[in-house]
Image 1 (spheres, helix red, strand yellow):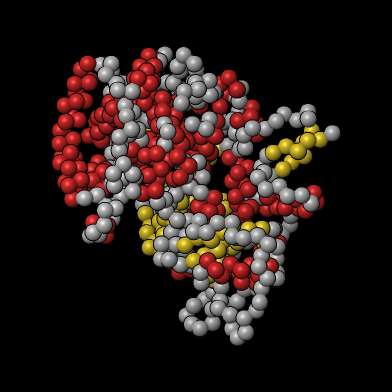
Image 2: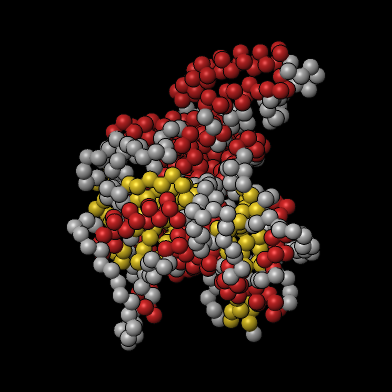
Length: 604
Ligand code: GTP
Ligand code: MG
């Protein structure tokens, strides 16, 4: 007898499976018929997810429409040619409307593309094939379409996170752990965000297909490693792939190829061409910038249809394997990603990271710091294993060699990892957050390097201020750019935050828990001032000019202003008092106990 087992498979298969079963399965993402004897699978591999997303992009189109209400017409029009699986609506920052349509199969999409026409008004415009289209207004009599059986999967699917709502939500959470989870849930890159990033990659593949018969454009970095937030940039790598059928020596007819002549790096020249093509031929690509003399040459551009900032490089498979590694660690335990999100957000608020490159830390090494912390042994055990465990358990199927013969072999299937090597430490997110800051407040940055390969601090091989071992190239330091001053700032902010968190957990004031970490001090003061009574609603400027009683009176505002002015002075004195007296003065005894418990759990 067989059982229906939940796992993730090609969604196209699910479509036909559903048809066969003639039953509705709404919550399962996919189904597979398995035998009882099969080992149940808990984890999906990065490559499976990436393959599903790429397949999804191959059977999807993005169509610019007039408005959200174009859904019925677009659905009706496309259904005449193909089966539609789902339609997702979003706006870009210019207020333009788009529908991302997923068809039931790639063949279906090809049928739709056969019906496409070109823009004929302008002779200077030369059309090309791309998965980004627009829906022409109807000529003559409007056709009547029936209302689709399914509605839009999402509207405004790419909308930026509403920070005011987020902060309101965070204020009303029951615990700091809930706050951390909420921050993650509300800011993590959503399904539409991921789909669009794969569509941007797909667009380049389609456009370059006639120039390069064997390339793949793969997303990497935060768009796919599970640590991406809404609006994150898109790192893309252009790679040479030689499918088996193209490398068969028995095949007699072979494409003539062109060797790139001249002394300069051929890839650099190809990237120059790619930049030209982006400027000239790729709809939606704007603000193209060439950074071709860097160690890893990059072409940057803005994808205006999707509002995604793209960094395209070539032949950097180690970047993809690094993303895979981060993804695997993130999938091992549900606390990893939420914790990394808070730390990344905290670092941004504290001004430790910046969207511009410089002598400061970036999100990637910061994420490695979080992983390293979670590898530390406590009495209970670890949350994450060291990378060397994954390398030791790798099989033949895990062998990957990247550019420059870089060995990127490590276990890919986390189902094969013994369950007693991770998630032994069951501390709450709140506890882990406090411990993260306490751990780095005591870390010996002077002499020690952070190595997720070992899962323990190792001796620094040189005098660079911050040393975080590159997990895939252990002789390199991923934070080599960080200056002494920036490293000092990290140490200072970590210490301050460890101390600040204790106070922030004491009682539910306006900036309790996470709020004190992720809200800029300047806006915090203003928000407090504008808050109405005990509610979280902020007074708008318009409200201030109303005469009715529903807004705080002048006196209330005045007294808030006075309190705010004296608060920072007072809190400095109070906090330094508390530091001297130890933590025996907590107003809330459960919080005091929690802090004492966290402190008791010494790192072994
Ligand atoms: P955000 O873009 O800030 O959201 O995070 P990100 O993880 O995408 O970081 P970034 O865009 O800076 O880098 C993209 C990816 O390149 C990272 O996720 C890593 O996989 C990889 N990467 C970054 N820095 C290094 C490095 O120094 N060495 C190697 N081998 N890979 C790196
Ligand atoms: Mg990135």
